Amino acid sequence: MVAAHGSDSLDSADWARLDALIGDIYECALDPALWNDTLARMTAALSPLEWDVAFLIWESSQPPTARFLGATGLAAGIPEIYAAVYAAENPWSRRIAPLRPGGLIDTDELIDRADLRASPLYRDFLVRWGLDRALAILLDRRGRERLALVMPGPGDRDIGLLKRGLRVLAPHIQRAVRISHRIAEAELRAGAAGAASDRAGSAVLCLRPDLSIVTANRLAEAYAASGVILMTGGRVAFRDAASQRKLASLAASAPPAGAAFTVQDRDGAAVAAVAARVPTQTARVLGGEVEGVGVILAIGGGAEPRGLEIDRVAAWFGLTPAEARLATALGGGARLADYCAARSVSINAGRYLLKGVFRKTEVTSQAQLAALLARLPAV
Image (tube, rainbow, N blue to C red):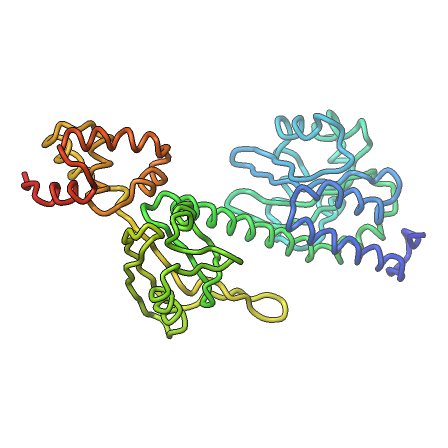
């Protein structure tokens, strides 16, 4: 049984419930969708009868807006009604807004219940449930928005245990909110970096110093398929032993350092590669550090030529824009498969374009095309 709500301290059973809730709170930092269930467990463990509503809400007064991140005990449609009619424009919100984050707030200390009952918030909204008192924790501020945990209920209940429990949980909820925000920002940055890397005309691999793969863009798979590199067991290696020795030597050297390679695929075609040894990234974790990127490897390139070259090639030989892009890329040393991957077109479509390029330029091989474009006069 939970200790009597009027007791002055928390007993061992209360602390056991709080310990479990703290674990749930940090799980919410990893998955915000868990907040509904955690808030329900919080009210079940700490609240008196009929004090079973709790919600996390972002609220702003300029303009008046409200966003519910998690809730328990709210009937369907209630968040929408509050957001449309009462957001920031009610006695509780106006008095909570200027307070500093972190402390436990009892609305009885901010506004007399008689004054609250005279307000539209109570008279037209809260009266049907008899909610005339609330406990709140202001958790965060971002610009004009503020995040709070709010637990309203009937004011005639003994909420001593709930207050004591929330004082214990408040700093953990704040930390969980900050952790969740940092995780979200890191995921957004990683997503943006991944999207930018996938648009590159080269295979780009970010490696740890032991050559294990942290990230690799989509063109890396094309070079693995063609036999330029091997990607097994979470590591990368050149199929060409001499180039692999150079890469391993670079990875073992002190940063900053760099190296260039000319490697071959299984068909004997030459491909350029460059690598850089950079200061190894590290991230602090419980018990030590996690090692991150220390080597950046780029393979191939030239699949996205400059617009001026495309226009000049197209005008000289009467090529379509698509044929001119392909001709300029192949003339710069790119392989057809890499060009097709970078442009997100099928290899069959690339071969069809290549036939047009060869016919209009009157060549029969990529080497002849490169030699022809190299002799093209500048205009």
